[in-house]
Length: 633
Image (cartoon, rainbow, N blue to C red; front, top):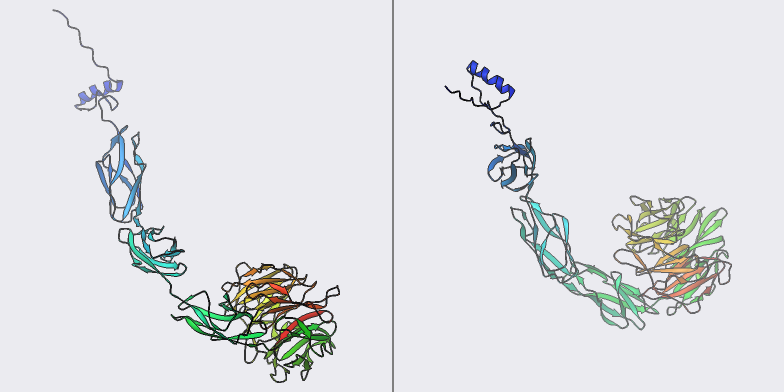
């Protein structure tokens, strides 16, 4: 019998060789005997695909892996697809359904499975936002500025569609308004409010139309020659050379205010304005009346510090030249006149020494000649330190700055005799080292510069003359050596930095706010300052021998140097004054050098503010002229 060869068995692992016989012996059947997951015939390892969802605020998002395996997610946090993938398999997570009102995006959503679960897929959800916009029509030039919800400013310079930069979520409210109107037009908004409802807003309609404007004018009478210059609202200068109707070139919208003033008087005449202020009410203004008459004579009075007297001059109404008044100079029985001030009827001077006290000396003015007669009761002893004096615009009160008591001493002026009577409440406290007081033209607000770098502010009782400190006074603002003011602005000279500071006046509270661009450069050593009667020009006397001239911006109060400024005058200037017509300016020039101890005179160009020396200027004064004042009795 032949013997057959036995087949060679497949080789197995040592463990399997041991386990399988034992399993057979024990009646146990083991699967996998004879193979593993790595080519041994077993099941391959698989891994989960997942990650995190964030930003989901409601509803449900549906995710897919490889375009099929779908899982819904309704809350922020981890997620895992139900189907696992083997190592080496590709995965691609996408969004099949977005949540209501939101848009979700996938980051790290695709790749190849390695040897671990995938947990890096990041799904981020954000609320849907929509643009807010519309169209502009009728815009003819300039820039319109729109706001949405009081912000997100959008400048528009042409007709057509517009869209705000900031988008809003569905359910948010929007309110489109006009923040800035284009010049000469008024734009209105239709369909400007609403709630975003899942779509961009394109229905806002902005329509622009030309603003109706109206002329400002009236009539001039009594003009006998020369040129009258009128202003409206401190600008829009209008030269007038004949009687009859006049109209300013700039028209105003209904509701706008107008204020017609005389910026420059005709030579030898004084023109006054009636019905000059008001509000435009949908029609041309034709009621302004300007009446001109021969100008009453004006007189200039100079305080001569070393001569203890006052020089008096008649002002030529046509040329501005000074001619000494008969009897001039008028002596003062006390030493050292330091300041002088005048109403239309009286002149007052402060003296620096009187048996240890200072005093006020007063004179009445002869209306035709300008000669001075001593006021009854003069001199009035005021105590130490009174070095400056100011008369109220109505000529009813006098205020003396007392450095000895850091206060203002106030006096009523007898309208008939000029006698002074101290007011109840005297003295009125100031800061340290007060200077001459400045009072507005209505006599209701007054300000005092203090050497401690402050300005004291007061409401002035126009009937009783008493001073009440303003809230917040003294104001810490400036060096403030001397002040001048219009109805709405205060100007202060600053000697050491060679500047003039400008402040706007709150007409309700009297508070001062620095004007943009302030301070403004002057010449060297600004010591005196004056504003013309129209409130359009500022002049600063610089001690080093020049006059700085500025125009006033009627809206902001900012100063612009006049062409040719500063104008040369003398060697050491102190006092400065402008005549009542705004036609002539005078400065005192004290000292011992050649060409000193005199007064310089200039004519004022009412349009440009430029100064031209008056023929015969300078005019001789006494020794060391310290101040000058002008009266028109």
